[in-house]
Amino acid sequence: MATLIRMPEVAAGATEIVLSRWQVTAGQSVKVGDVLAEMETEKAVVDYAADADGIVHRILVADGASVEVGAPIMLLLAAGEDPSVADALLGGDAAAAPVASAAEPVAASPVAAPIATAPVATAPTSAAEPDVAADGRIFASPLVRKMARERSVNLNAIAGTGPQGRIVRRDLDAHLAGQSQSAPVASTPAPTATTGSELAKQEYSSSYSMVPHSGMRRAIARRLTESKSTVPHFYVTADCKVDALLELRKRINDSSPVKISVNDIVVKAVACALMDVPESNVVWTPDAMRRYESADIAIAVTTDGGLLTPVIRGVEKRSLSNLSLEIKELAERARAGKLRQEELEGGSFAVSNLGMFGTKEFTAILNPPQSGILAVGAASPRAIVEDGQIVVANVMTVTLSADHRAVDGALAAEWLAAFVRRIENPLGMLV
Image (cartoon, rainbow, N blue to C red; front, side, top):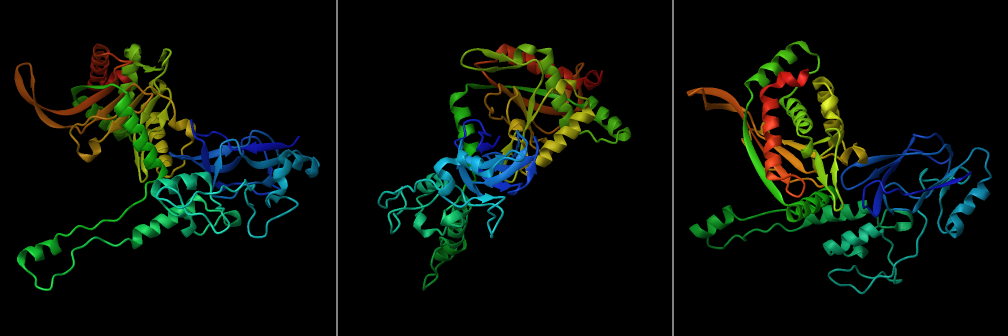
């Protein structure tokens, strides 16, 4: 039986998804689990896999198109099925625009134009709405229209490269990039008679360029603003003596083919502390407290586009070598934009480590719905008092940011004390 594939909701709450690139062509056989396309969300490029066997009969949208969730994107034909019967699934849309099929290839590309939707008539030109085209209609994806309104961009000034001249996101991005390059740079004109103050103005005049926000940057800004303004944060700080940790790490790395980092041990200690204080392994929901049985921990990874937080499941059950390999692999795929959406969701806790940059201490913003995030600073030699004597030890400062709706102050202090015990006695985590 033929299957009409529709744009899935690959990101929670998304209404439109950019289909970055098809991985199949018309006439190709696919099996369950085969990757059909790469889809771009605000945080990652997601592989979309087939959930049925069949033959790709028609591809209904082009690479780079922004598609509403639920809109048809592909027609999958069962082996031996009559194509004319399968086309009936598209209804009247089948004839609305040229589409790629095994029987009707498109000369320029194996990917054909999207099904044409009713053109949207635009309002007269204003600061928030693009001009109306000569025939009263303009062809652009809904996402492009929204972005154009936000940036006061006249869509009539953009040449569309999508199907039938449709303006897609890549066209708008290229237009904005061209504007930023051609924008005049603010400077002070050279005076006819140069005085000391005028010369100073010339030497220290300001210049800048406008860099358009990426979808990821907008998502980060929106989520962190919501988190800081709607989640009641509070902070608990502790100093950890890490001489035993550094010695253990050296001994492991001297004999193990997998090199362990300080961050790997920190993440393991966070998981063990969550198991020691299970009341802290929770997230707030409007109806009930969700308590996790395992330690699913998000790791903050810096990428060119912004901060991503892939989640590692069941950290308390993993060996240090397995955990280290998983963190490295997730970090590499995060920087390459190859994380799957499910790898960015869930978890009750996060770790953000800036110690490698020499940062002594900082506080981090919660990533909802997670109830805690540990900000980890650099370990450095410091003078401390032991048994009434001043000694030098390697000390690392950590700060817990907690959601006061789910974790009370005393509970946060109990969890942090458990973490300090684990990090200062790391051999116990290997048993």
